[in-house]
Image: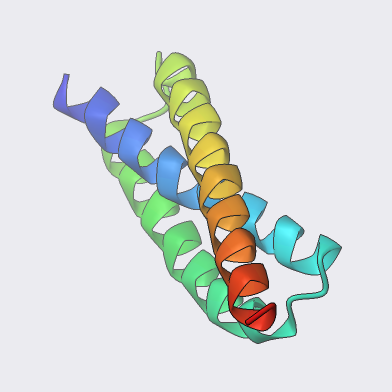
Length: 91
């Protein structure tokens, strides 16, 4: 059970960062590209380490659920951040 939780957590972070990076590119948010790229590299290394430690059998459900969760959180956070910046610029 702990292995599934670890894979879910890794997938949430990793896919969330990838989604955030795509949104940064789509909306030309240059300031976020390099920090997110560095975080993606760390998350990628973390993902490889966790998958190597847990093995690969039976984790696709945990990885899929974690990926969907990370993507959803990334979209919500990006929308919140953009709405916050628009309000600041309109003052």
